[in-house]
Amino acid sequence: MGPTIKDVAKKANVSVATVSRVLNNQPGYSEKTKKKVLQVIEEMGYQPNAIARGLINKRTQTIGVLFPSVSSMFSSGVLHGIEHTAHERDHSVIVCNTDEDGKRTMKYLQVLREKQVDGIIFTSEVMKEEYYNALTMMNIPVVLLATSSVRYPFPFVKVDDKQAAYSATEYLIKKGHRKIAMISGTEEDPIAGTPRIEGYREALGDYGIPFQKNLLVFGDFGYRSGRIAMEKLLQTKAEFSAVFAASDEMAAGAINVAYQHGIKVPDHLSVIGYDNLQIAEMSVPPLTTVAQPLFEMGKLAAEMLLTMIETGTRVESRIMPHTIIERQSVAQLS
Image (tube, rainbow, N blue to C red; front, side):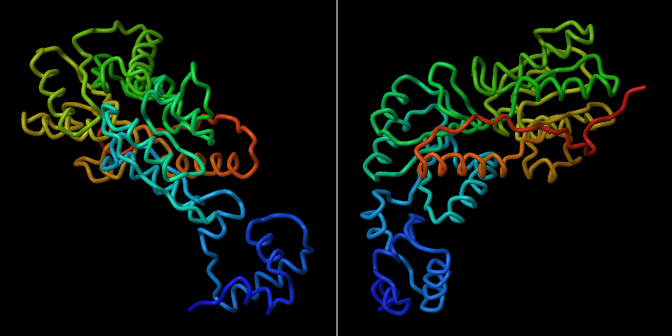
């Protein structure tokens, strides 16, 4: 049996209450006492009992994270950031895969309520009224990640999707491309669908390039949908020298179809993606893309949530920077 909190208190020559306050960052002791207690904890290898700590501070030291698709490379990137911060601050993470159409969201919100998580990071989905009502009843802090809501103003962390899509389209234009197709995400998706289309169209307009409806096709952000969308573009027989895909996975699917049709990237067709996932580096040729700082976004969302949990104060939303990562999938036209 390992050492107990009483053993630590006895060796440090302080009360059990003082050890408890040190463990939970509560006031009521000197810096000298704190150092002494922490030194004894390290020497004895004492591991605080999570249940006991929960009884003291009324918290479970766990946070819930809701993802529409846990298996996606995007989710993996932000989850690494979330777990990095959570574990650094002695919290566990419960990950819930809500499915892309949100069918399991209400079920998992109930599960997280029963688990008495201290806070929730809500990722990528649209914040519906039923979700908001369930979260409000839980009365715990919530941070939105890679999504936002005007109607339900939870603090959020995200990239400006419209501006990022504008940057991707403008990059192609400055490379000499005038006939630019777009493979968008889910049609009428207000989070990562519509804003990226708006950015694409606005860039075309600002550079005097007419929008062609037949050069806009839709996918679901996944690899397979990128392949299907690229086939649709080729079937239109429309001329285009470049494709902006609203995710790296769809871009990879488009490149694969181009290869099967004997279309060389970037010699015959330029492709730019969105996200800067690992697949962008693995693509042949390596994919030029708009980078979202996924790991940093996850870290920041967790930091914001834990600050709200620990202080009870609201935090400000954050727009994260995007950058163009140049690789070998875009050619300069003369």
